[in-house]
Image 1 (cartoon, rainbow, N blue to C red):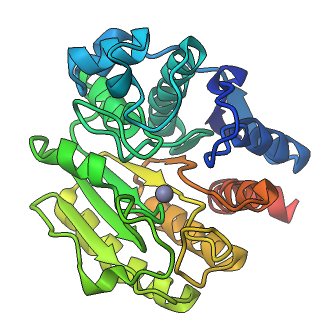
Image 2: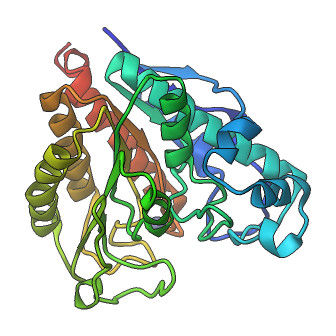
Length: 315
Ligand SMILES: [Zn+2]
């Protein structure tokens, strides 16, 4: 059995006090995967370097996150600054690089941290410090391992930070299938009434409030293949958000665990069918009962196993 490589480290965790973002979920998801006995190899990533961050972010912003000054910039992602947090984001971003590299080798890999899709070049936003998706793509491009990449963002929120970063990166395409905006983060808002404008390489699909699993999957199926055909990527980065879940306080969508697992399975099957290496990350999830968030993320790993290690379930 050829296990799935997964990046994780206890160093992903930093104590940020009481916060809507359950940062301890990274450890809980790792434990849930272990408890389920899934065929996964855990690997500790390397810490992301200044050089890696500076391909994507401004020197002033990177310095602010390191030192805590200026404080408003260091906390622009809406976390209270601490040296521990500055260190943790170095490791979670390192995990994205490690997982993307592992995906190229194995065909599939995961990082048990977010892709941080709201982060901009010069500042953070929405609990996202550095944009680990673009950081990982630029590192592997610098190594000559890939030329082109595709980000499929299925977090509840539109991947605005990534879209901005892609404006001068025509070799990376994004499809963001979203049911809410971060900047107007109210439940039961219908984003299909005011869509995000598309660009050449950043496409989006607004999921109407109340959408069920059937519609969600139809929208994914209607857009993923055509966007992939257009982008011709060497690798797929998949933001498998837990916040579209119907019990999430920010979600106006009517999606249960089975619906989100079906979404994950569709994505992994599409990647496998195309021989396209795929790397997944966890992304958002704010259900007060953190066990529900962990279950969404565990299910993503189960679906990756179903598609890439099918003998695990037939044994
Ligand atoms: Zn989100």
